[in-house]
Image (cartoon, rainbow, N blue to C red):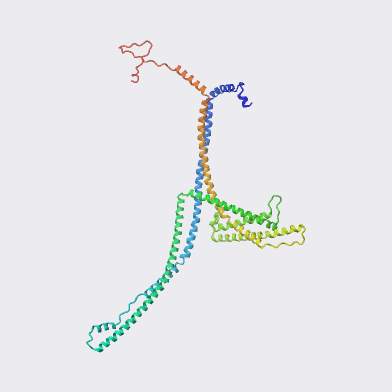
Length: 499
């Protein structure tokens, strides 16, 4: 029976039929009021409890995932600081060996330069000539009176001339020695400049070592903060988001390089090995080209792991340097071999295509068909392209590690965020179901409000009939012997009931 037929079951008039249905259903709903209220309360309470427990469970899982994320961020930051610490340590080691390793020789040169400057300075000192002994005799003769003797005057004149010549000679000698001292002092300038350059170089070396030491101190302080549990979550998440986008771009470029190299080498490899695919399968030449590409990637990963550029394989960290050097050489040999094979196969692609074109023309009936001359420029281009793509693919381990680390940080952050949102939604829905249960009970009371009102009216009337009548308080004049009606009990006054 259709819903319209069910509604119009009682009468031809739709409104009358709906009224009859209401008259039938409202008493039934009134009779099942207690059971319906229990069902509504139990159902909404059950759903609310389930959703509330689910929300709390999701919240606890989000908190646990948040702790795991913080531990992962701490590990990522620790590995990054370890890499920077190793770089700074190698830089300060190289600077000390390069700049301060020759410090004894530099100190010896500085000491020699200082000794030479000291000797030149002492030789350039101004030495005043000593007073000759005959000057005192001349002074005594000059003080003595001539007493009119012409010979004494002549002797004095001769002595004056001799003194004048001696003074001029002494002055010339002093000027000559002064010029020599000035030249010696001028010769000290290059030595002073060289000494200043050496001291400046030493100062720059010391300042460089000090800068590296300061950066190492900063990284040690960050290590201490990590040990104390202080992790820069926001900065690491933002940085990891940028690294994830950049590494995804690099991986896309590497995938494009791999596809280009695969199609570049597929035809020459098929000419060398053959092995046509059966149906829609994979041929031997395609497997060989894929193997060459994976060998190039593996060789590059081995080289980067042995040099500690990437650290996806922790086992390489504990290997001795001599063994790591051997692994590095093995990876280099494999990479060079694969690059040479790829370049030679790519260069032969033009030759095979020219042979195929010549064979097609020959099959078309053109006689005396000679092979066209090989274009050396296109051959060289294919050779360089094969080599370049192989070496580019060997660098794939670096963006892979960047992508994996950044993906762990970003996915952890998104997972925590989504779990927290899901927990909040479940708790909100649980609270909403509690309110919905109250609303359903109110609507149910509204549905049966007529029988409920009748029931309440009947109950009030019944209560009013069964309630005992309260005695009326009558004020009587006081008397010595109050009369009490026979068969009636004496009731205490209102004020004396509590006495």
